[in-house]
Length: 366
Image: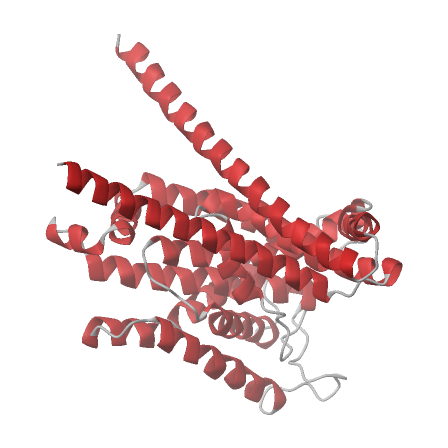
């Protein structure tokens, strides 16, 4: 009897999980379709063939195994950034400082990579990753202090810390830690023991992508299967109710910010250890900002971050091929991203007003 009950509970949980996944997949498909339609209209009005342009974009992102592997590699840091945003946004902590936290975490990982010598790879790689996590998390502490001490909203402080973090690392790489032999401003090359092993010969894809996939499930388990994650989600749904029933609202917000900074710092560690091999100023093309959009597109769900990250990576990797083969500028990709965010925002507003309307109807009829 007990085994039968357990089986029914597992079946119900699996059914609910797949129903939720199917709903998210449908939402993805509709939003992405509308975004691509906007891009197609822009391409058509400019006198180009939308089908040829999107065909070239697909070819540049998935045309062969090497390009597909490069797209997966590009998605690695986006997965970490998206997870960082998802954890924060799920807890109603609007962390807009992912870009600055990314720079700080990346530099810390690079510093450990080129400073320590003669370390075995099994020690050096985890040490670099740990440095990225710690540095990214530490960069959130001033904002958390302001919030806990004086209840300062986190949006503006995190936004300002972006510029401080970026400019601070630029100073470090141009002056005290610059490699004089480098053609561009950059730190010394990381030790070979600090570089991530490749997964595919002839490609930049490395085990950082595997770490990103593992973290998808780790974050999902933490947010949806643990008491602390449940408290953080409840604080995100309704902070006043969570406080009224005795949930640790301030602790949840602090943890969300700390974990968010650590995740994006880990993404920076993977990108510098796997792709660049040294820290360079302005290495990011907006990975932190893309992470926020990816999280919104995924509805702040950890498992939804992966397809959204893969889509963004494909747009980035295929844009150059689209421009070179069809003459359609890469700025069209930016228009597609903007259109997607527009439709995501509309969806959020519609859901918000629908909830308010339902509440008003129930109040009026009650």
